[in-house]
Amino acid sequence: MEESTSETNKPRKLLLVGWDAAEWTVVRPLVNAGLMPNLTRLIEGGVSGNLAAGQPLVSPLVWASIVTGKRPYKHGVLGTGEPRSDKLDTRPISSHARSTKALWNILSQSGKRVHCVNAYASAPADSINGVFVPREFILGSITAESAPFCLNVEPDSFGKSLEVLRIAPTDLDASLLLHFLPNAAKLNDRRDPRLHIVASALAETATTHAIACDILQHQEWDFTAVTYTALETISHAFMRFHPPKLEEISGEEFNEFGDVVQKTYRLCDMMLGRLAELAGPDATVLVVSDHGFVTGRSRASMKFVRDEAGAMALHRGQGMFVLKGPSIIADELLEGATVYDVAPTVLTLFGLPSAADMDGRPLMEALVGLPMPERVPSWDSVAGDSGMVGPEQLPEVDESISYLAELGYKETPSPDAQQRLNAVRDDIDFNTARSLIDARRPAEALPFLERLVRLHPDNPNYARSLFESYIACGRLDDARAVVQRSWDRGFHGTLQHLGFAMVDVAENRFQSALDHLRHVQPESICMPGVNLLIGRAYLRLRNWEEADRAFQQEIAEWPENASALTGRAAVALETGKYQPAAEIALQAIGLKTDFAEAHHALGIALMKLHRPQESAIALRRCLQ
Image (cartoon, rainbow, N blue to C red):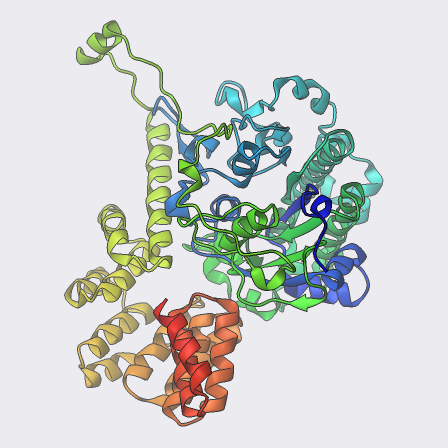
C-alpha cells in the first residue's frame, strides 16, 4: 500500500546520540542482564552492529568523519590541537579546522530546524537554523584570553539561559559520587586523581544532558545531535579494573573500582531513555560510537600504551551503532557499516542526496520504503546558507606593523610555546599520513612521514609507518634503509628483524628472511600488527602452518582484525579448505566492508565451491 501524500511529506525527526568510546563487549553483557533497558528497546526495534572506524583512532577526527562522511585528510580535523591564529602558541582544535560541511550545516541550509550539543571541534559555534552549543561551552574550561570564541553559543541570546544549566564538579550531590566511588572520602584524603576524573566526567555529562533535554523540550526540531564523552574518560581511567580481573590489579582495587565502567554505561542508558521520551515515538533514534575500547585479557598486553604508542592505542577500531525508527527494519544485525556511512544514511532518511566526495554510503539494507537518492558531486558546492564557520579570517596587517617586522621587532613564540607548536604540527602531519594510508594512498603519505622521521629518528611509530608506506609503494630499498638506520642506532629487537624479513620476502631472499624470523619474538613487544606482519611474511614464504599460527595469535590479541582474518582465509585457500576460507573472508568483510583482499578471497573460495554467480559478485566488489 502506497503512503499518502501527507505521510510522505510528513517531517522526519532524527535524534543522533553519540557515546564516545562505547564498546559492544561491555554493552552486550549489560543488555543480556537487563541492565540497559532503553538501549535494548532500540536494538530489538531496529538494526544494530559494529561501526568500523578508520585510522587514526583519535576522537575529534573520527567524530568529524561521522558528521561529514569523509576521512580526516578530507575534512581537515587532524589533531587535538592547532596553532593559534597569531602562530605564537597552540589552542584546542577549533571548528575553523573543518573544511567541509557537517550534517548540521547541510540540513540547516536544506530548511531543517537543527540543534547540536557538545560536538568535538565545534567552537566557534556554527550559525545554523537552531541552537549550537560547542563542547567548550559545556566544559567551561577555555579562558577568554586563550580563545575568546570558545564560550559562545549560537544564537547569542541562548547563552545566558543555558549558562545556568552548567554544572561544576563541586555542584554534584555527594550521593552520586558515592554511587560510583563508595570510598570517595578516602580518595579525597589522599588526593587520588580518580575522584576528580569521575567528578569531572559526571559534571560534563550532567551539563550535556540538561542542555539537550532543555532544547528538546522547548525548541522545534528536525535533527538534534548530542555527544556524551563520559565513557571515553571513564574507560581510560577505569577499564583496567573492569572484569575479568587482571593479575596486575590487586583485589582491593578490583573491589573498589571494578564496577565504575558499567555504572557509567548504565547512566548513559538512563539518559538515552529520557532523550528518546522527549523525542517522541515517531522520531528516529541513532546511537553511535566513534570507536571501541580494548577490554578483556587484551588489556594485559598494553604495556606499550604507557610508552611510545600513547593512550589512543587503547581505542579499538570497531565502534557500535543502533538505529530505530519508522523507516528502519526491526531486530536485525547489520554487518559492514563504517563511521563514514552515518552522514549519508541520515541524509537519506531526510530524503536528501548524499555526495560523491563522501567516503561512506547510505545503509539502504537497514531502510524500509526509502528510494536510493541521487548523489550530488559535493555538498560544499551546493549554494545556500549553511552557517559554517569555515577557515579563520586573519586580520589585515597594516604597513607600520610590516615595517617593524622587517626591522626585527617581531614577536616570536617562547621556547615552551615553540615546542608546543612543533608538537601540534607533528601530530597533524602524522594523523594526515595515517588517514592517507588508511585510504590506500601511501605515496601521498610519504612526504609527511619522511619529514617526521628526519626530525625524530628514534620515534618507532613514525619509522614503522614510513616503512609500511615504502613497502606499499614498492620502494624496497627505502624500506630496508629505514630498518637499517634503526639497527645502526643500536635497536636490534623484534621489529627490526621483522622489518628485514619483510623486505627479504618481497625481494625473494627467502633464506635471509627465515634467518631474521627466527629472531622474531612477538611476545617481547605487545603491539597490534606484529603477528600480522609475521603471518604475511610466512605466507609469502608458503609456510602455511607458521602463517596461520601467527594470524591466529594476532586474532587472539585483537579479535576483530580484518587483515588477520583475511590472512587466515588466504591460508585456507592455499590448503584447499574452501568452505572455511569463505566463512573467514565473510567475517573480515563484516568488520571492514571495503576490504578488497577479503572480497577477493571470498570470490576465489566461492569459485572453488562451484558458486560462480556469488563469486562474480564478490570479485566485482573487490574491483570496486
